[in-house]
Length: 592
Image 1 (cartoon, rainbow, N blue to C red):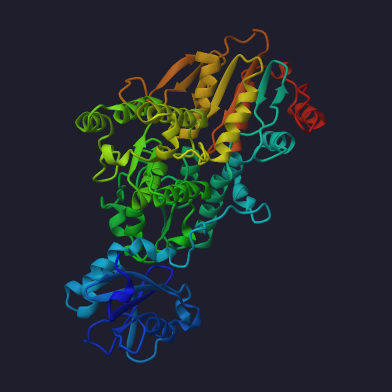
Image 2: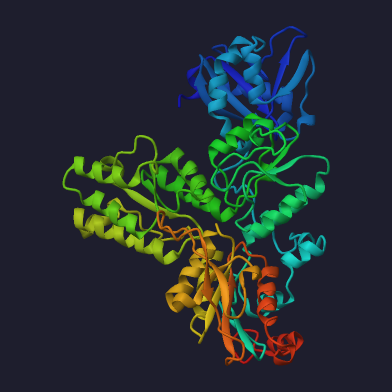
């Protein structure tokens, strides 16, 4: 980008929180002009003139940011959230979205100097909502315990049933001594059946923040249309409850635009300035954000991106600035990985690899004896999953690994190890550090994902007859928990969405997660054996839920299984909870 000082002319656009530009004109029929602009004399500095021009409109609080030099002028943006604070005297003033500005340009109603820089304005639109952010700022930090709005989980009977669980609340209060450290699991002995629940399961802080903000937004904006870019989280029951309250989704979790059922038009095409669009916890691609910015829809106030996802983006940016290519361990079809790739590609050549098998193919590219073979192997495996112009011969010289936050940490570490061996074999062990960033290994994994996996690992050490992992069919972190259970228990590990999938003590409906594209079984539900007929000896069932699984679903699973036994064979839940309360609060006493 050219520096602003290279030009003797400038164009300043002042935006509000909805990314609407403040324009003015002398009167009806005159052309709309930028917030400020003109030429700078030799006796003046460009920065001083722009600062003075901004001060006349926005007061002392505004800050002009140089964006580009284009059309013979230096382009500056400024963001002043409080539009009412702007001084707009003389002539006619108005606020316009970028799409509206483009329409004015087509109609010849935009001043020539503004029309000349409009392509650059649109090209840099993604910067507008974040002009006042530093590199260390997060879009939205987790709420503290005092800031939490737990009332949203008790809006009505439906919300209470979905989100509330006296059982889960007691387990988390007593076993979850430290938020970031796994403790011993809880054993709930109902007599005819026993349950093992890890110390950590269910909603993470990012999901809690997103859910609370979604319910708050709906409640605070009666009469306004509230959309979610895509699914808030990967749980159908949460999303169904939100849609029942008026929320609508613009696109599917795979990015497919959704249409209005009445008109058949894509909802994207019908967005209006006064609509609200919430960004889900997974984040959003710059392309989707740019579409919202261009329509004049406020972004920051309704951006529920998890700060641990944004932490990955910051890591990718840091690696890119250090000259590394960014390798993203993730599923290319997942919203979070798409968003990470979109952010990473701004700063560095970027590539998505799915798993350790693809890491082996990447290692083969690194080891290829000729550039031609390296490019051929790369193209056969990674087409469509890299930045434009990616050259494996050039761009795999120095790499750093980040990951989709919901995957298995051990798999990310295995991928790093595979790359380390590949570079060692190619360049020698002493030269590995020159080619692979290894100061941090897998540290972009979400801590909640990791502690849920660690807590499950402790629970799996106990004698078990079966394991139930509860979560949405498209929940990546839930699947990682299932993989851990399956590794230990084989066919006695089951993936279910809710208690509805438990047919009887003998059978249930198990979901085969689509982990390996092309497997005909995956993505389907199949009938499986569960605990066997009633009357067998007491069985022990492990139950856990992914980071998008509400506590209410866990309790309903327990109630469903208990419902298959005569009441006389079950100990009262009050007695079970009392024993849980009496147990060692650090989780060291398993006699509960």
